[in-house]
Length: 315
Image 1 (tube, rainbow, N blue to C red):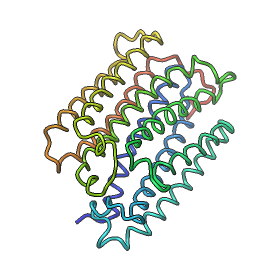
Image 2: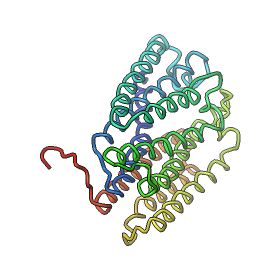
Image 3: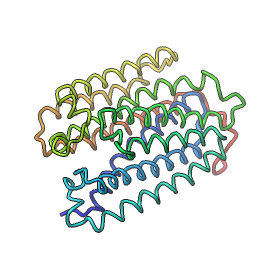
């Protein structure tokens, strides 16, 4: 029988691929304009990891203290509650302070606006995972995923790198790619959130959790999932056209490949037995990471040459 620690850790590790994909997508946008900065990008990745872990642990802690039922379904409550209860709280606090410490380094690099963004992330994270009614326990949970991993994650990561050595950071030339990519990653993370709700549909009904899936139904969820796949592919196509990326289709490879993965997931949502549906969550999380990673590799190789004055290891 899995312990509380193993269940929480496994689910947290899978969801980290969404945050990592968001940071990689933001770095890809910076690379497209020759603004790649590996140190700020690494700090952004570390911050996202700690912030996500803190939110994940706190969400489980909220469930434990309010007896919402998710922990019981995951066999975390019952026999292992004495272990899980203090563990969840202490891990959430510890990860939160590590995220704050990393954020301080980003503030020192990029200025006061990062502090304002950090305050927004904390407040929005609290609304999503805490409060009287966490947004992630409502149909609006998909909007939380879109905002945090889309505009906030992608645009912030790209902007931090673009302004690191720029004398005019606020210019449309550098910002525009991240605006498009934030929509792409946001829609992909909405799909991942839909997968979470889809795989726990019956238990969420039993626990009176009003997710998008329980409110709108499984058929509507599958339709929205498939629509989002074609939508982010269309946004990518429009981005390549408006930015005049003449890469002979190379720039569309990540989006088309991820769309094929989402079509596969959509088909499996219809055909897999209920007990196997959670396996699709890992595929969906990995798809976000795949989009960010492939986009970064392509734009780093084909984008504007890096004009940074910073060097590493003498190169």
